[in-house]
Amino acid sequence: RVMIRQSPIRRFFQPESCYSPVPPVQLLVWKLKNPKLIIIDTLQKVLSQKLEFKNSNAYEKQYNQFGEIKDFVQEHGISIIGSGHQKKRQEDDIFDTVNGSMAIQGSTDQLMIITKSTKNQSFFRLRTIGRDVLEQDLTLEKNPKNMRFKSLGSTDLYEDSERSANIRKVLEETKKAM
Image (cartoon, rainbow, N blue to C red):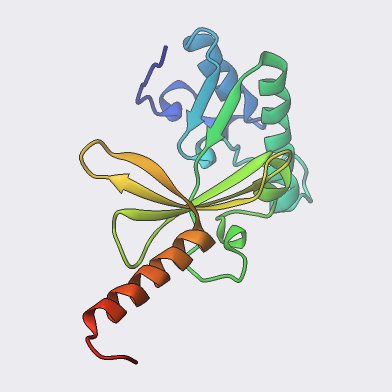
């Protein structure tokens, strides 16, 4: 059974009014009557803006808040998918483009980044890393009719097969030997 609701978390709870991000998640669990999956768009909506410690830095603050959420959801058998945004500047490691402190990478079980292809608007790249999961780099194709994604396999293999197809096409179009 899937329930889809568009209910901004701020309507239920103002995270800036407390030190912990757990109360808004607790409130959603209570309001949705024991859900198994909660999707938070974006994670910033549940993070408290107050500092717990006078001298805490952004990493320490976010790591502690994510840790509280993680403890709560593990205790209640819930999974959370939290969305976020990427920084605009290019980085050598795609996971360094996650907006926020490094605590997001350090405290989550899995990170997934989806980027749109610059060549084809129907193609996307999904990269994932995490604890107890295989690191993956997949090419996805979005069907514009039903808005569903289909995996085309490993990005390296897909790009190689795409290059090979382009070479074959050029060879077929060329009548004379090269």
